[in-house]
Length: 311
Image (cartoon, rainbow, N blue to C red):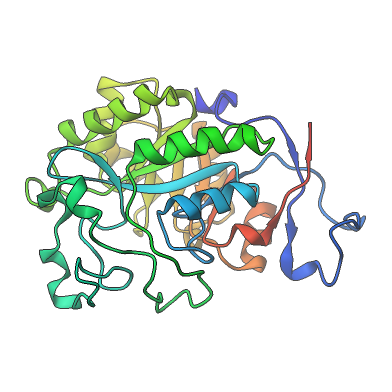
């Protein structure tokens, strides 16, 4: 199980916040005042959204090159039952252009419903060229929304080619009860399609499936009890209430970072859950959360982590 560190590779990790690095060159050693080595899961949010277009192959490879432990991503389903990586089950006006290269109006974006398009049809949309309104430093280049299987294949080949450990995958199911049958299949089918890709790739022991939709997690616990599950949280309910809604204790509790305090860290430890928090883009917040004792941090900016691994 996850809490026996099946999920982590055992490497000693120094977390060096970029804001504290000053003008240190690549060959200089960390200052002696830096914190002791930690076992910490560093996850690149949607690849590395602050630096590259989200949920793209180039973004995931960049995150790996920056040293993340885990690639975090979002899964939706196409009309021909392919598992595609996209934060929304439609083409977002913020990041995508239509097949003619034109802007998508915000009020019209849900008409570009991925669940009604085949995978081949989704390739007509570009989601890498448009300037993101909130991530102005993103590199821009043509990019389509890739298949989950495509990303795993590329990442599994990239890791040994670059001399690093194989990555882990944290995959969110983008589902809500009111969208069943319109923007995605029901939880049972969604979960089965996702698991089929993971098992075919042979990465089941390095995969987390996360969701705000407790139904997906409930189905997976029943049908695939060996898969590591993470409950995503952004509400003001107590952690006890959230676990009651889920109906079991998952391996990971994954809240918005603003919800993390000493009492939540203690609660997760008491339940044997890992605490992995999102989306942490501020160096001071990273330091606060690490000091509190979180087990993982999800960030749009993996370049704010400098990793030194002792084999």
